[in-house]
Image (cartoon, rainbow, N blue to C red):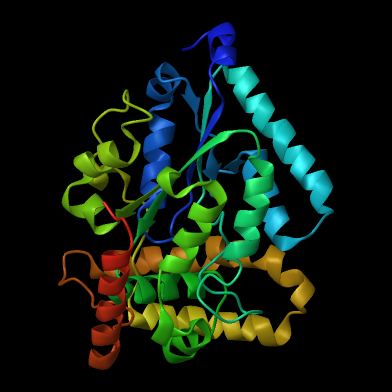
Length: 316
């Protein structure tokens, strides 16, 4: 670990790993937590974000509150700066690695249509929060043909009840692109400081991809083995239909002010047990089909949109 005196002489740096959702973020967060000692050798610390274990650093809570506008922005920004300084000082490091796939908002917001509709506001707040620090952004993108069905499952698990077609229409699936998000990040933090990677490479060449994404900043990290950190349970269409039914019932019968507190309980005591039992019942059988698949026309269109992104963005 660096001494505090040495860390103080090095410009303080933020490595912001901000998604996108459904691109392996959870696996990487567990990998970083398991290798805190290696991070410390490189003068870095990674504040945890593990909701199931109740281990969430206050910095991540401040991110959520900033996006939600639950408290005065100035007070939250001051609290965020104070927490960052404490992380630097207590650990005696020059780098804080922030891994939070929701830092730019979610791809879907019920109150606002579009793909990542809150990303510009979120990035503006992060720019204020990180003012004066060197900021390096690591961002993984995913092909829309697999991203949209995968994120739809997450949307339902988080309390959504729209059909897949309704969900796609609300997002605006005819105009999907990663370019606005990455363009806004580049404008805020400098295009040279935005490092974009294809999430499929985390599956195909996991060790090399992590080195490519983080190795220049964190060379002491050991070899990343993706299978060791696969944390999410998959569900089939029947289970997802059950989820949607529960969600619609809650939305109809329970006052909206209770939804935020009720949804984590629903996930813990209803959805996850159902997913676990479903996994036991299908163990040893043929792999269950995905909960949703795009139509042929959708797949073709989304493929073309993703190829356009790859052609226009600097993607590793």
